Amino acid sequence: MSPARPQAEESALAAVAEALRCPECGRGLIFADSVLRCERGHSFDIARQGYVSLLTGAAGKLTGDSAAMLDARAAFQSAGYFTPVAEAIADAAVSSSPERDGERVLDIGAGTGYYTARVLDALPAARGIALDIAKAAGRRCARAHPRAAAVVADAWRGLPVGDHTITLAMSVFAPRNPGEIVRALAPAGRYIVVTPTAAHLAELIDPLGMVTVDPDKDRRLTEALAGRFERRAGATVEYPMSLPHEAIAALVGMGPSAHHAATPADRIAALPDPCTVTASVSVAVYTPTAGWSPADPHLTADPRSL
Ligand SMILES: C[S@@+](CC[C@H](N)C(=O)[O-])C[C@H]1O[C@@H](n2cnc3c(N)ncnc32)[C@H](O)[C@@H]1O
Ligand SMILES: [Zn+2]
View 1 (spheres, protein in one colour):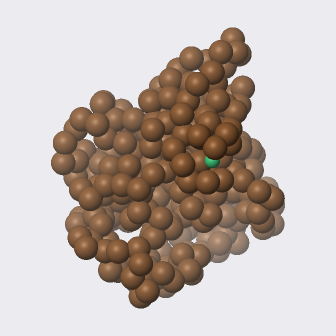
View 2 (cartoon, rainbow, N blue to C red):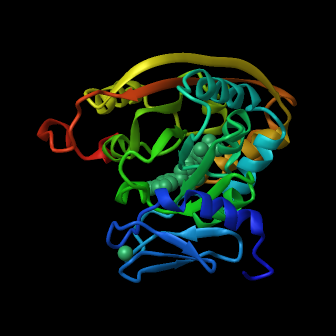
C-alpha cells in the first residue's frame, strides 16, 4: 500500500468490495494490493486521495459538481445550517432499519459525503458507499467517514453494485435512477429520497435570480417510483435559517445557479445581514414493491425523465 494512501480509506473500500461490480463486464470485483479487479482482468486503481473511479469509456457530458461548488457546499454544511435535514435523514434510516447489523448504505450523488457520514454515525455497524460522478466529490467522500468507501461513477449509466446488495439507498438533492436502485436493493431494503419543496430558499429566488424548484417535480418523482416502490413514510422538514452574507454566497455557490451565471456580489450585499431564509425539504422512505421484475415493459421508461 502506498504510504500516501491512508489505510482507513482502503479498508472502507475493501469492506464493500464484494458488493461492487465491474463497470466493464458486470462481474464481481476483488480488492487486493490497492486495486479492484474482476476475473476478466479489468482493474481499477484506488486514487492517492482514497477513492476508486469506476467511470468507463469516453467521458460523458455529465461531470457533476465542480470542486468550487463542493467547497461551497462543505462550508455551508459544516456551519450546521442543514443539521435538521441530516438528523431527519439519520432518523429515517434508523427507524426504517429492519436490523441494525450488516447494513450496506449506498448514497447516490453523495457530494461532500455529509449525509453519508451522518447516516453511518446513526447505524454503527453499517458500511457505506458514497457514489458521485465528480472526482472532486470522490476526494471529499473518501475523507467523510471511516466506514464510507468513495466510488466515482455515473448513476445514469448504471450503479456499479450487484443485484440486491444494498440495504439502504439514498438520493439527497441528487440523481434518482429508480430501475437501477430497485435492482441494487435487497428485498427488505429501503430508499430515502430527499427533495426540496417549493418553499426551500424561496426568499432568495427572486433577489438572487436563483433556479426555482420545478413545481411538477413531486408528481414526476411519484410517477417514476410508482410500481417499483411503495412510499412508507414521509415528512417535510421546514425551519428558518438566519444566514449571514457569507453563508448566502456559499449557498449560491453550491447550487444549480452556480452552473449558470455568477450572482453579482452586489445582489447579496442588498439583502439584510443576516437574512432569514426558509429551509424546506421532503424526506421520504420507499421500499421496493414485492414482485417487481426488471423485465416489466411498463417500467422501463428513461430514468432521465425525472
Ligand atoms: C445537489 S448535489 C447534492 C450532494 C449531496 N447529496 C448533498 O446533498 O450534499 C448533487 C450531486 O450529484 C452528483 N451527480 C450529478 N450527476 C450525477 C450522476 N450522473 N451520477 C452520480 N452523481 C451525480 C453531483 O456531482 C453532486 O455532487
Ligand atoms: Zn470486468
